[in-house]
Image 1 (tube, rainbow, N blue to C red):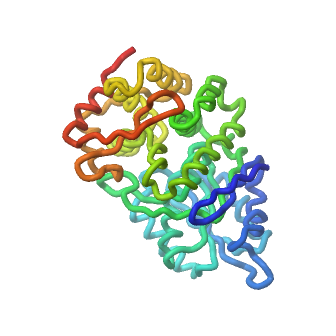
Image 2: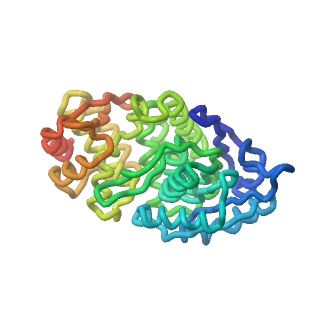
Image 3: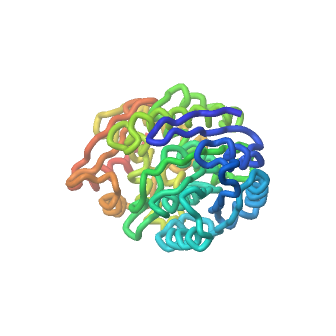
Length: 361
């Protein structure tokens, strides 16, 4: 079992190990602020999960919570990005109120990024903030979305447009849960790992030439360490945390244009390829860097382009939260392991994105 401590506005531990879902209640009982103790036993833990994860893991978590003094209640919603909306969010808030949770109680997210975002935003807003624990069940949520305190729901105009920065009290990562993922869902997480290598760690990137499943826990730990360091330096995304959005500007547009039929990781992969081609056209990186990124995406069966036009992608990008006035910040690679921020004028955005769709090697 490995522990990584995040030092942000709230200090918390990320616990990584095999089979630790059954110890989740014990881990929580030993966590300051959310423990059940002699002063007040029987805290309520509201488990928020989707219908797929519920069938697989909800009972194990509830049993662990109950065995360690928590009163467990569960809210289950339909799986998929389409549930990450204001309607589900309000339903969760009403559920917490109906179950009479207080500020001493806990919201527990059991699931992937959609679950973590919904449950975290609800925890941030209910009673102006109650305790929150992340138990990610996908590779993408383990290496990225469960760490760092970003919570949100989607609006009709775009992805993650309503949300809050709200750090969890604990993150519990059971790597054995990844064994039930489909290949496509596992590849979504691989896209975020590739992203992390491109923006921050060439050694990590090169290590992915060996199948990631051969050294999965080591890769997970390294990705979380990188995310920890970025969040500690720039919790509210005013500087270096923006680099974590590599591939996400065009990627979020692709997700929305597909009606969320294209998953987050696959859309981000296409977004990374588009950004890398843009970087070549803008003279920021050379074709060897682009080739490295495209070959890595190919190795993991991830898309390297988009069926959507530059005009459609640019139009959706203009609603992205990374837009600032008459420009939008794009993250572009210099080489594997290093990126730069480049402000693109909105009037040039379609032309620049078009360049990111066109280059062939």
